[in-house]
Structure formats: C-alpha cells, structure tokens
Image 1 (cartoon, helix red, strand yellow):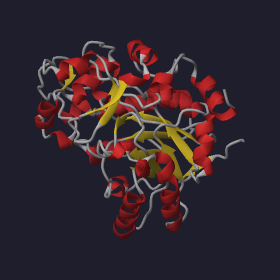
Image 2 (tube, rainbow, N blue to C red):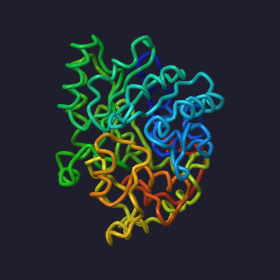
Image 3 (cartoon, one colour):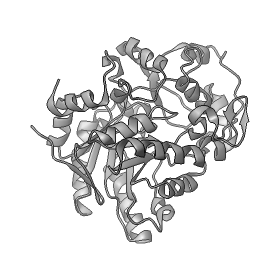
Image 4 (cartoon, rainbow, N blue to C red):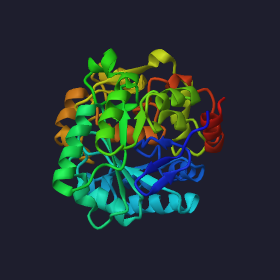
Length: 363
C-alpha cells in the first residue's frame, strides 16, 4: 500500500513518518534537517543544546558541562541548530521536541517559535498550558504526546476552555519506545497498555474533537508496522531508534556501535531521576549504578524539574543530563544509551534517504 500524506495544522508531511526527538544531541540539525528534506518530519530535540558545537553556545560551563537550565537549554545553541537544519531542508516542515518536565519549558517553547520552528511536540507530562507560550505565533502547530485516551481528553478540555484551541495532532506513545515511558514499570508489560490496544480508543477520542490526527509511536520499526498502525486508524507514525542507524544521525559513532552490537536482552527498563522508567541499553554504566560505584552526582545542569536539583538522581544512582551528554560524546564507560525495544534489530548504517525508501516501499 502507498501512504497518504499527514496534515499537522497548516503543514503537509509528504510521507507520514515523524522522526522521534532524541536528546542529548542524537537528533539535531543533520538528522532532523535530512528527514524533513526526504519528505518526513524531522524533529530537533531541545535537550542539551548548550552542548552543541562543543558547548560554545553556553554562556557558562563547569567542568565542560553547561551550568544550570539557561545554559543546558541554550537559546543560542537551539537557534543555531534550527538554522543549520533549515539549510538542509529549506522551507519543508520542521519540528522541535520540548519536554514538559524540563526547567524553563515556557522559555524554550518561545525560543523555538522565535527561531521559526513550524511544529512543537511535547511529552514527559501533560502539557495543559502549552498554548500559553505560543501566543503571537498562530502558525506554529502544537502536538502533545499522550499515553491514553483519558490524557487526550484532559488536554482537549483544558486547551479549549483556556485557549479556545485544540491540538493540531497528537502522538500516542506506547511502552516500547526508547527513553522515558508514560507508564509505570508494571504497566509497560500489561496487555491493555500496548500500543496496538491503545490506538483505537485514542483515535475514537480524537474524532470527537474534530478528527485530530493520531501519530502512533513506540516499537514501530518497518513498513509492516506502519501499515498495521494505519489499519487501526493512525494517520502517521513516529520512529526514533531506527533513525539512529543512519549516516546523518547526529549521534557519535560509538553510540551507533553500541546499538549495532546490542542483543535483545541488553535492552531494558531502568529507573530514572525523572520518576518514570526509561528504556536503554545495558552498558558499563548499568554495572556501576548496580554496584553504587558510579560517578559523583553534582547536578550542574539542573535539567528536569522532577529530579529536584539532583535529589532523585542520587536516589537512582546517576545524573541523567551528564550521562546522556556522555553518550552523545561517545563515552562508552559512562554514557547512557537509550533505545526502543527493537534496537537490537539494527544491523547496518544507511542514509536517511535509503531508510525512508525502505519504510515507504518495503525492505
């Protein structure tokens, strides 16, 4: 089957494939710009933009790490990433992923609007006040990430009442995605919370609010998976991990190698300072955390509000900002390497153009 285009607000995505936002630095200008150029929707992660171009956009560094939220989420770095992505994709639609749980959420959303981003995707919490920060930018499409029909209902009711607007699309993320989950550890394994069982109720709820497009995410790997989601009523899919296996992915070659070498049993759920489980690859860091011999936790970057300035990081045994940035730099000893459940299936590095062809035309 051939796929229809995906409409998000005033933007038409030629191929209904949204590249998941992956931070720190896994989906920045090269990956996002190229995905948009090839007809999908490239998504820039706003996480850790102070690390972009060796940290030169952060106003202050401590031990090479951006100090506090205003530097970790560097406006200058974010704007430069967006500008460089635009050089690749031109005026094709381009998105940013901005976590609701971050410190400085409102400021980072406004930064994205000022830089000319077309679509903002937000998860890691229910973004009930998301439209508040995009006033004055009516063309910017807003896409919340949810894990249930109930969550979509709450967002729609509040947005309509407070701001007289509704989401332009919604990403429904199941528990097989890489990184942080919108479920408890136990829920991640329950049948009723699996993506294939969530799509229909969310599509039905979205229809009540004017046929909001539903984008299915979490465990989508190939054309067959895309077709299965479409058959359930989704109008698009979001894929993160598979795009790591591209030449244009901004991740360090060591990050790609960790994924290429991973076996199915290496991909596991772990505790996170954010308060929800996260899925990644078991590496040397896992052993250090298990034996309580990991690196010191100093909370230089103050990245996410639920961590309470390092309190939760100390409880779980690692600082997520530091360990994700180490992965971005290819540090195999201390890096935290996120992956969806299918990451072990990655067996080659190809171009984004070739991957998009596989996803739309088959292997």
